[in-house]
Each structure stands twice: as structure tokens, then as C-alpha cells.
Image (cartoon, rainbow, N blue to C red):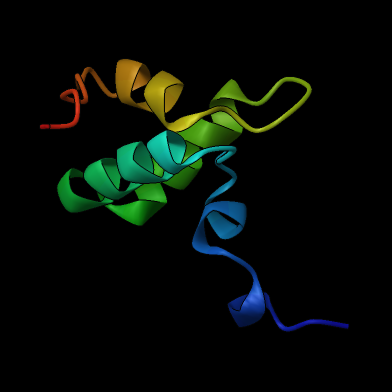
Length: 69
């Protein structure tokens, strides 16, 4: 059995991260919103699988900026 602390942060938050862009968006959300709020929104949006960061941002009324080149 693994401890909850050994799980990736996004798993504990209920967020689906499948790419480096998803991870960048999640970091952006965490800089601006409390992790409890992100977890709550993720739980509310969950249907078949965890929502991606972009969907959570939309629900929070936030717009994640595009990465700077």
C-alpha cells in the first residue's frame, strides 16, 4: 500500500494531467487558487474521469495564459 503523500499532487486533487501543458496549467491554477477549491471543483466536474486543468480554470472563471515563447 502506498502512502497518500507518494501520489502525484494532481491525483490528490482529482485533476487529470496527461501532458506537460496540463501540468503547466495546473501549476498556474495552484498559484492563484487554494488547493481545496481546485479539489472541490474537480470533484463537482467529475463524470467518468478527472477533469483537466483547463476545465477547472473555466469553472473558476479564470483564463490560463498561453505559454510564453
